[in-house]
Length: 104
Image 1 (cartoon, rainbow, N blue to C red):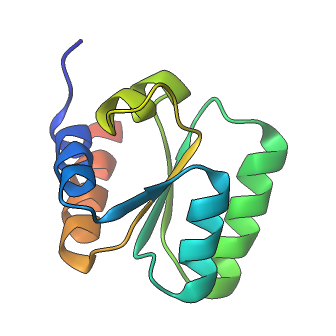
Image 2: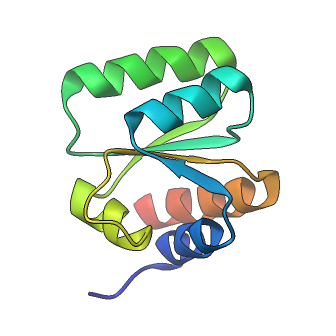
């Protein structure tokens, strides 16, 4: 499986300790103000998408819906992940730029 540049950056950020993954840790990062970007798997449940969409809107955190749970988890070195928060501004900006370019 070939990772694209955005997911490669997410992998690098994870190795650098600049991400939180899983619904609970992602929610904590958003509410504590340490999340600069939230990425939700496109195949997550509608309830999960709505919850994070509303939360990110309230706390003014950018949110992306991208890939699937397996791809997102694989990029982070985990089995599968529904959600991830990037806790470094530089990584967040570059990941957001790469993932939005790839979607177009």
